[in-house]
Image (cartoon, rainbow, N blue to C red; front, side, top):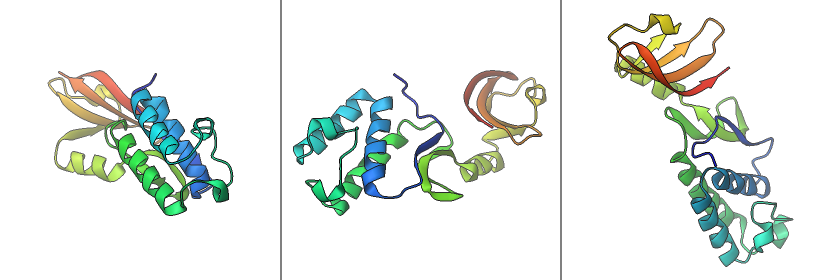
Length: 163
């Protein structure tokens, strides 16, 4: 079971709780069985049948809780998902599409880390200084981005890469 969220969409095309809550529950289950079980138990305790949890909750009119309570539970799940997000990402809506909820690169945090000299921006791995140890963000001429860590000028870990 993966323990890190994948960068990308959790649910797209809808901001309606009937669509987003089951998708968020499925996502937390995919990265943490323990957290998934905890939220399933919470929902079951509120009156959802276990077979509904993570599969789809049916029409919202049939839910044993109101939409406000459902949004609160979803907010708790999203807060828990942050613990499984890769470095320099956030869990929320895509900046270009508010109906696309997912895990996305936090470009502002990356720029701040570069500005504060906590991370190095490079265009190619060959650009890593020989004695450099720390975080780097590689942005190639096509705009693809890789976030990683180097020791003595050698990339030793890639946290994530996007095209």
